[in-house]
Length: 374
Image (cartoon, rainbow, N blue to C red):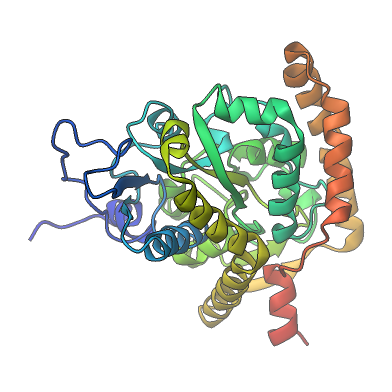
């Protein structure tokens, strides 16, 4: 039996379970853009992450519900962990009809969705992850430029917005305050790396599958912009047992999309079924699923010896002042203005919607305090 290194195991297994369908091929002419003679639409859900990540578990529920409610008229094959397309290839695959459905994380496509990245911030005051779903949806529905970015520029129909919940600092050593982050090498995703830099650390853009071994080898001192639930599934706490709530708020808005040509070809009754499942995500499923997963991951980490803590309100306020509004201003001046887009008004509306949708999802520190705090 061939010996598999821990690095490969983490990359292909822990990141989300077994790779599905990597060796499958499709006969020429077998296209999901048209139904077969029986009126059955065959699709591929194509994802860069594994099935155990929180966004993947939500998407898995969505796919299964659509298939079930369609009574067999929609069939969807799932491809996890980049088994069909690699990281950074999923949006072009949907755009070009090579895949029909996919989860799109903005940080991998900065030139494809530059305006949507105006929704991706830390220390913004969006402290409830379930709030962010509703903020993104209303911004999309009320901003023609955002719709154009997805529909025309990327040939994608937005099914729903999602996100990665929360991202505390996951550190090898204690992190009692902002000053203690200075010089530490911390993994950051997308705008998360910039956030680490603004707080005095060194943001390291290391892919998720390499974080465990990077912590193990001392390449990293910790991780940020890494979802708490996924961190537990990948056992990052084995190498970095200090879980520190830094007050950054909701983490990494993402979008689940369908090829627009396919969407427009679907009968109205199937569109209604899909939209009904989407409505359930916004109304209850996201909050129910993430609440369950957050609580489970807290319990697992506590059992494994993780140490939970939080920065004081004064330290969180200090961190926020170091990151915002400077980070937002960069987007306004370097992205929005060159595109002749009113970034100031856009961000003001985001602020208003955060207040409109307060949200309920608790973060890891709050759950820890409720169950284990003294």
